[in-house]
Image (cartoon, rainbow, N blue to C red; front, side):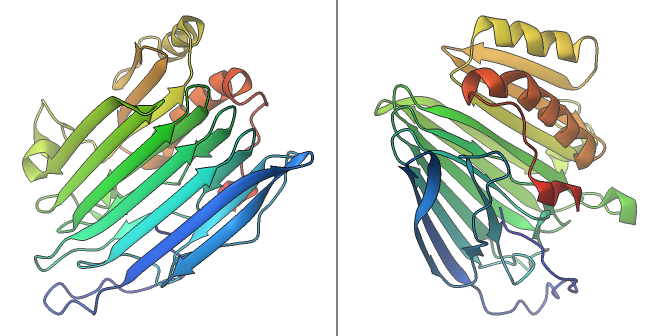
Length: 283
């Protein structure tokens, strides 16, 4: 996800700046007892910090987007490939920001490929979509038959703390998941002012999110169901080994806490390690 690294003003919707085109390609490989960032190529303002190893062999990487936010016309492309037996975790230092638009659309495309017996965790912090923004985000996830994946997407529409809702703008989210070369899951979600307010939509909740876990089991489904209990605006489904959690909330941090709790329940079985939260989340 795009990352806010500095305080910046909101671009004027009537005079949008020149668009950025940025591309980042990452490749992870197993070397001895740890995963290394074997390949890192970037074009434009999109890069990564040096890898961290807070839990031994798993490679933790933080995505950086120095401009601090995304405006209409910007196009960001992120590709990450995890080779056989490698394990990587990708996150961001802060929330991403998509600023209001004068009519144009900002696009973000993420392509993730996880090889046999490899594991990838895609755990960006929330994306803030300002009122009037136009975001088109696509996630393409290619899993080998015995790959392991945990990923989430948390969206915050408007800025409730600043008295801003989502009276105009759009956010289009696309998920495309394939397994062993076959399309397995396809979803398209379009959020606008009507969907933000409607009972069939977000019903005024500013934060929404989806989390995917593969491979999962009926036991993990039961554990997440017990975690949710009678709590409103939380849900979980299970489709042929894919666990899908969803949530709505008034604040993105509360929704992230729910996803982190689910992560704590499933990571040991899926990734083979206890939860090790990236240190950057606590700063």
